[in-house]
Length: 135
Image (cartoon, rainbow, N blue to C red; front, top):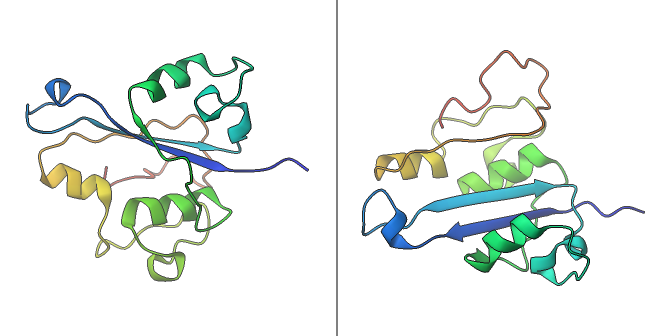
């Protein structure tokens, strides 16, 4: 059986490269349906992930990250709000977060960071709608 994992890397690059000299750049990379044992930075010797390995070599890598739910949007809602699914109420694709929840991109924006999301696979019942209006 194929294992499904969400692997999250929180990357803090050198403060000198940040917009303000006293703040680090923050890059959050989440990967869905990926086997951690195939990634070089996680110990694989197969050489399948050279770009991620290079980024991870300059970063903080969480080796034991646990998902709050088996669905990507529920897990991302927990990751970006710091709350459990029963609190943020996201249960499936297309669900919206409440504006009253703490939300990492909004908190970072309030501190002067520019935020963006780059998504390679869009699973949404209405793709014409903006998925992340708070980014």
